[in-house]
Length: 527
Image 1 (tube, one colour):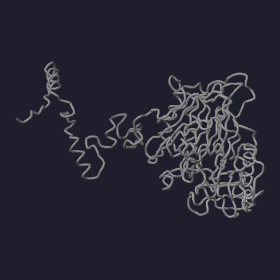
Image 2 (spheres, helix red, strand yellow; image 1 turned 90 degrees about the horizontal axis):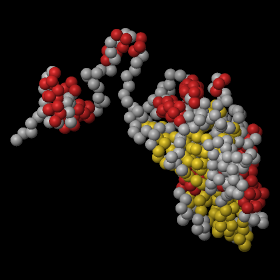
Image 3 (cartoon, rainbow, N blue to C red; image 1 turned 90 degrees about the vertical axis):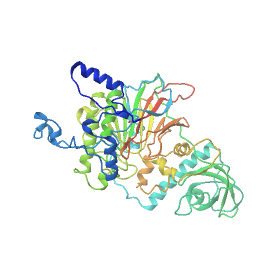
């Protein structure tokens, strides 16, 4: 027997109500017996679109001015002038908004609302001459100056390793010796390819080895983690002066943490928001994700917002295809104006960190702060433009910041043989801290233009930071490495979809005996 098809019957008054309830009881309006609006059939329309390869266009609601309304919303109304019809983007259709994807510390019951920087002390860490504060003439150094800069890095860390491990004296790397020797140098690769266990060379320091190079045999090392540019001390045999058989490896030492001179009492708790660009999706230049971030800032009123570039991404398809209707500088200024004016009522401090992917800015590392945006009088105290890299002091808590994707760069070059529980991210982060540099990789990645004269001044870590912000295209994380909380907040957008940002609650805590970590809680959240 064929199944009875339920069809709607149109009535009025009481009979309409009775008929409506009867139809509902019989299943009218459910998924399997839906009421077709204006006779449109979803399955038929979907099949037509799939067969034609065209996106759906609603014939009953055309994308024309007449569909907006009448009178004030009529086709010739000033209120509808300039209206553009657009399809929903992948970004606007995203799910899991506000979902916490990873966390650290005591997040349960933690309030993520700040007080808009009312009791915030924000400044560049260290002496003013150790911070890059303005543009500079770059790429004028000679090869000898580059060599001098690299030698200084080896000698400085070598001196610290010698003192810590109580090494009497370093030996020459290129002089044959029949006894075990202890040598200082920098890891390199013997070819143009990527580093591997068979291509490792050690380039000695100038004082003891005159910069000589020898291949290194790693077969007797049980554990190692190496990358080009890494300063190490090795013990081993070098009986011919042409090959070092390494038996022991000293990889590096972290700097001490900063201890504020004023330790009379605990400082106020600070809520810090961290986001990294791009701030708009690749299929649009409307900065919708940034507007959502501004909404989150207005809602939570963080004390400090650290915003890392790119703000106008050189990899954006409209930039690459020259489709922008305004100059790079104008688009960037509109972007900054949107953030600064959109968060003015919160009082939150804003920190802007440039990126090498900012198409309008100097593509050099270290990178000077943005200098083209004129701040309004009411914004000068709460907006800070800093360099990349940069070290900040927020109420006595030291933040290390860099927008370079160092995790990706070093992850592509690092080799290891280890039974340690440390994953690759943790090993790379440990290298950053123990090599005492925001960018210890040498040679740098191809996309990096490094001015080594300025690199010597501004790239070394002044202390081990309490919090290290290292944004990357790789997966977000929050890790405790040697007491330093390392955060990859992810990027605010990834292609055409939404990404993530980070938030932290920090407080400098006074202790006479031992250091207390200032990061109370941290989360990475979907935009």
